[in-house]
Amino acid sequence: MAAAVAFAVAAVSVSCWFVVRGKLYEELDNELAAAQSPQRLATVEAVLTACPQEPPPLSNNGDNIIKQPDVYYLQLVRADGTRCLAPNSRREFVKVSEKDEQVARDAASDGAGIYRNGTDSKGNPVRVLTLPLLIRQPPAPETVYPDTALLVALPLEDTQKTLSDLALLLLVVSGIGVVLSGVAGRAVARTGLTPVDRLTETVEHVARTEDLTVRIPLDDDSDDEIARLSRSFNSMTTALASSKALQQQLIADAGHELRTPLTSLRTNIELLTRSEETGRPLPEADRKALLASVKAQMTELAALIGDLQELSRSEGQRGERVQVVSLADTVESALRRARLRGPELTITADLQPWYARAEPAALERAIVNILDNAVKFSPEGGTIEVVLHNGVLTVRDHGPGIPAEELPYVFDRFWRSPSARALPGSGLGLSIVVRTVHQAGGVVTLDHAPGGGTVATVRLPGAPTPPPETP
Image (cartoon, rainbow, N blue to C red; front, top):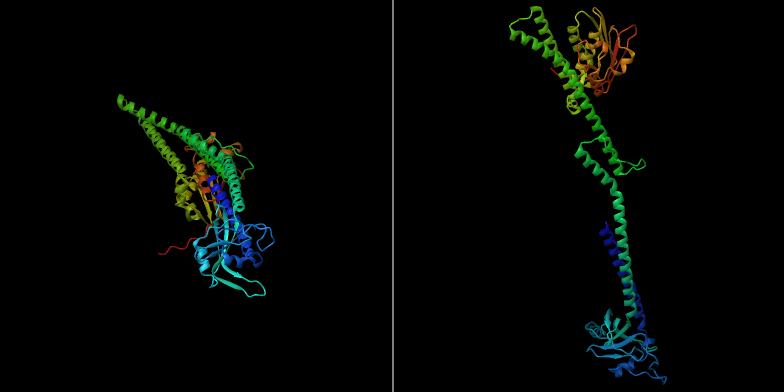
C-alpha cells in the first residue's frame, strides 16, 4: 500500500511541477512576444547600418541610445551568424544557434518565429524568441529586412529558481506524505489484520488439539467481513462440537445397549458348550429355551445394528433417494407387516390418497416403527386404528399409554420407559421416526388418546401427484 501511495504522490508531484513549469514558460513567451514592439526598437535601423560586434557604450547626452540598459536582450542576427546588439539591450550577447540563423534566412518569406532556451555570453540561462525582423515607423510602411532576424530574450534565473524551489518543496512534502502514509497504512493493516490473526491462531489450535470448544472473541457491534467470517467459524465449531458429542453419546449408548444381548448370548452359548464338553446333555426343554433365547438375542442385535446404520447415514446419502411417494401406499405396506407381528390384534385403516416428498424405504420403516410400538403395547385382542386424512396420519392404540412425565423423552435415542424395558427393542425406533419425518419436512407427535392408550400423529406436506407410469 505504501508503494502505491508513493507512486501516486510522485505522479501528482511530477505532474504539478510540469504544469507550473508550463505556466511560467507561457508567461515568459507572452512577455517576449510583446517585447518586440517598434517603440522598443527605435534605433534598429542605425544598428543595422553599423552592426557593431560589441555592445555600444552607455550615453548620457540624450541621443537615441538609452541611458540605462533594458531588462531584455535585443539582438539582431544575420543569416551568416553575425550578431549585434540594439542600444537599449542588456550588455551581453545571446549565443546564436543554427535555428536562429535559419529564421534569418527565411525572413524574406515571412517565416515563423521560434521559442527556445539558451545562454548569454556569461553562461546565464535565458528564454529566447527569434523571429523575422519587421519594423514599422509611421507614417512609413512596414519594412522587411531580408536575411535578418530579431532575437529577444529574458533571463531565466528567477524562473529556474522558482522551479527548483518548487521541486524541493514537492520532494519534501511527498517524502513526508509517503512516510506518514506508510506508518498509517502499517497501523491500519495491523489493526485490520488482528481479527485475521486471531482466526488463524484459533484454526491452528483446533487443527492441532481437536478442541472444538474454543471460540473467537467478537465485538457485538462489528459487522464487517472478518466479523461475519468469525461468526461463521464459531457456528461451525459449535455444530462440529455438537455432532462430536452426539457421536460419542451414540457410541456410548450403542455400547451399553449391545452389552446386554451380547452378555445373554455369551451366557447361553457357554451353557450349551459346557453341556457338550462335560457330556451331560441339557434337558430338551431347557435346550430349546436356550436356543430360542439365542435366536431372540440375535434378532435383537440385528435390529439394533440396522437402527444404528439408519441413524449413521448422512444427509447427502438420503437426499439422493428422495422422491414423490404415495403415503397411502406406504402405510398400506407397513400395515401388512404390522398385521403379521400382531395377528391377534384388530387393525383398522381409513386411508385417503396423499403424496409427499421423502425417501420411500426410510418413510416405510418410520411408519413400521410407529405401528410396532402400537402392536407392542396393545393388549391381547385389542384394536389399532390407523387414519390418513389430508396428509395427517394418526395411529391410535388402546394400551396403557405413556405417563405424562415420560412424554418429553420418548423421542430420545436409546430411551426406554421403565415399564417397557422387559420388552424387545433398542430404544431407537422413535428416534428414527423423528429424523425421517423431519427430513421430509413434517412433524411427529406422541400424546395420550382420549379414553386411554396412545395416539401418534404424523403431518407431512403434500407434493404434486406424479404422472402415471406408461406401460
